[in-house]
Length: 179
Image (cartoon, rainbow, N blue to C red; front, side, top):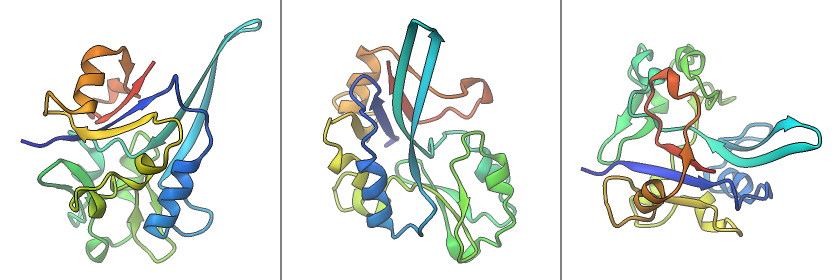
């Protein structure tokens, strides 16, 4: 079975936002909205500080509350691969999925439907990488089948220390941050 995941190496991300621009262009994301974004997190007390920069987006959860809370089933898990998608024609704009996402990864497209990262499923189905991964100048973004032991994402998760965001939410996210 295929389970797509993304791994972000926070030790390499410089916050350039090339991924954000590539996503906006590839997916025709409206101005003032974004399917992915850059987060800077500073921990510690001066002068002992640490900075983590990471590219964030939908976590494409294996237990997605957005899907479970969608009354029209517009939000769904695409198979193969487990990518969480929104069928725009079925979305009524009720915002139940937006409210239920613990990662704030959804927004209401001005046209009237919930929108989010799709891992560029249209590219993946053609054997290409998501737009964000294909343009990253530091090669900190990795995408692939987590269930394939030979894939980059599988090898990285097995060999490096990583975190997931809000693991206590029980969503089983498929977005991993190497630290």
